[in-house]
Length: 236
Image (cartoon, helix red, strand yellow):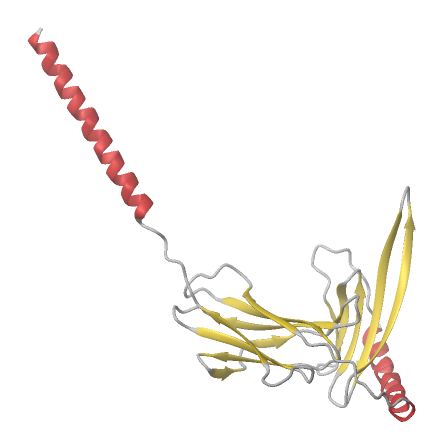
């Protein structure tokens, strides 16, 4: 059963010399397997309800002004119940002949510059798909891995599609190969798979060698010049 989503957008206009338009978003989503409630502002997530831990999660960065989200987890629970009831009605009333499907676009990249034996994280970004859910899985050297894996909330884009991030913590070892596989019912045939090879660039010794040789030759030149200068003065 596909996820049913309810989107509430509030447009706030701040009047100064010019008009600045901001978008405040509240999203509720539910299905047989998915539960989601989040608050956003200008495309950034502010808060979401974690229905597994039964708590609210504030996702504002540390430098942001503090905002009180007291009671918003309970609001998310209430919205989830309303979502389930609306979903049941929608299924009975609406029977679309053609289902809207948007194929996801997947990319994989490291969070930080790759340094061998230094802990890092791989990010699998899945975007532009509709409807949720998607299934994201990871492999290391063709073996399925789950330890160190996390999955973000679904985030609604301005065009009505969704994106999601999956993160895998890892320690780079030369020659290791990782892959992120995405399965969505819009994908024909095999699921999408993106691979990432650990390729740690070793520091080049060329510049150091050239500098060392150049410095040595320079010192030898100075010494030779000094020697011949002394000899020349003695001849006089």
